[in-house]
Length: 189
Image 1 (cartoon, rainbow, N blue to C red):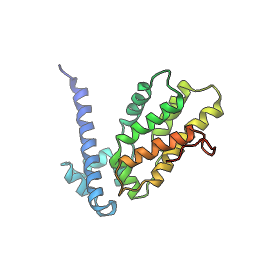
Image 2 (tube, rainbow, N blue to C red):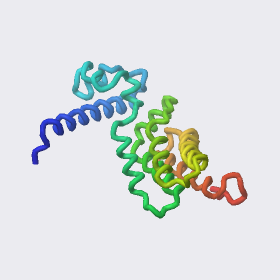
Image 3 (cartoon, one colour):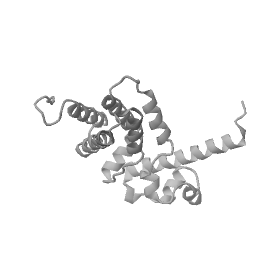
Image 4 (cartoon, rainbow, N blue to C red):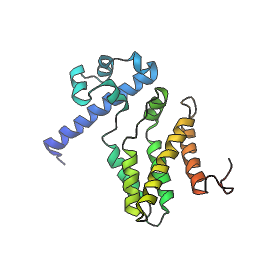
């Protein structure tokens, strides 16, 4: 089946973007962000420095910027949630699913104290808007509380720990809120 010129071009652009991101992440993880140049990243991805700058404005954007596939990846995570599932459970699974596919990104962000709201918060807001209560304050609190759970779990997790610990902390945080954080009902772990 012929993809056509546009489809092939887009696929090659995505492959080049991914090769640059992967090379940057690998080199930064091995040597540290400050010890890696854009020339080295380009060489590791087998492209020129000029090509690198066709895709990224800076080394920081390459290493820490959003993945262009994240919005669709997050939309798919939202669509996968069953219609009758409690909204807070859906938010927990969307956040956990996002965390599951971004180990390298989260490790680098933690190691270099880089924080980003990224594309996750708008995806959670869309999830809530699609299944929310109709009370704007309630829906906004759900979205922001879900982000707070992730940010708090991320703050507690150390990159020297197994990555599964971050997912455990995220799920535990969601469970604590669901059980009534600050009440005697909150589970102890």
